[in-house]
Length: 483
View (cartoon, rainbow, N blue to C red):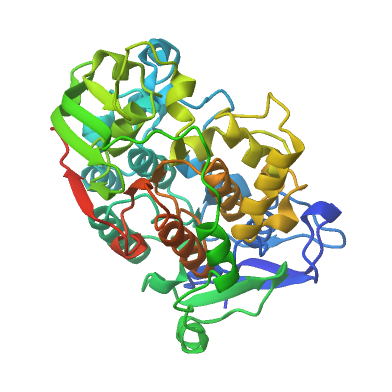
């Protein structure tokens, strides 16, 4: 049988990107593989080795892309990494850029970034599936995180690769689009020679197109097994992961002095947001009272992140809207930092913009002053608080590791600790469980539920997976896309 990709006793030259034992793996003709494992296990290192990013010591990765006319790895293997799927095409993106329309002239539109299609039928299928026509004239920075994923998938699939590698391709997509993407991949596999490798953290819904699984754990590449054998050996996730001791520590946290005590935390009165010809939010009325926990839902591009950017004062248009936060009307003299010091926030935009080569504990500490990066040295007792929250999230041993050397799942845990570090009155969690493995998803859910049992804690949470919502949800708001 033809092996499209084969690695035999592969050891990467660079010790920083080396697995603990030599890599042995193959992708044979007709196979579709899921690479699975816990956060930080080494899944991305394995993929980087497969695509030849890290040269090997004694031998080379062997490729046989026939019947593809090109023998080049670049032409035949396309890899959509976790950060790529947030649209991180260059290093110039900064947090809040999506909301600052004065930057539009310097950013490309979707139409200019899509390659010319060699297969008109494939182009039509992709454009119909992902509703690309409606995005063609939109500036890339105005796309929602879900729309960015659709754009990235379309751009990659139009190049007609022999092997498509995708890191967590279904996260950030609404349920309908997840189903459509799965159906599309099945159809492409049937119509072409495409073979698929998926890197998955959420392993409770491995798509049916997968034939084999390669487990990765503790920076060791396991043997390739059939999907059926893998599923038969899966252990159930515990009902609760957060220990009783840590739960009691969260509940026993002392309350600070400078808290607001208002009946209404958020009030939006007939709020409308427009970008050019497109209306994102139209005359929205919404009130969030102290102690309420809201689930915010809606299809990709319906305005969920835009709404949260108004509450957090990241969106300049928020000052032209009738918004009251913690009983203070927006634009009545308060600074952006007065607003933010009562809010803990994590989002895809934040993860996408955080390209700081700092120790993980400094990233957590930046939450104390709501900065992207650390510009003010915390006091020793504040650093102790940062370590305390890192311990709660199970990442205390990562505190001195560079943020950029962590896996995407470990980075997400660091950013979650950053959101909680100042014990905020309002917790805003936009897709907080992105990229987390099943155990860490359960852990974070436990932490959210425990934190929300504290007095006068209010929460707004966005997710496309209903099973991610904590038990404490008291209300829901569903946004519909304005066509």
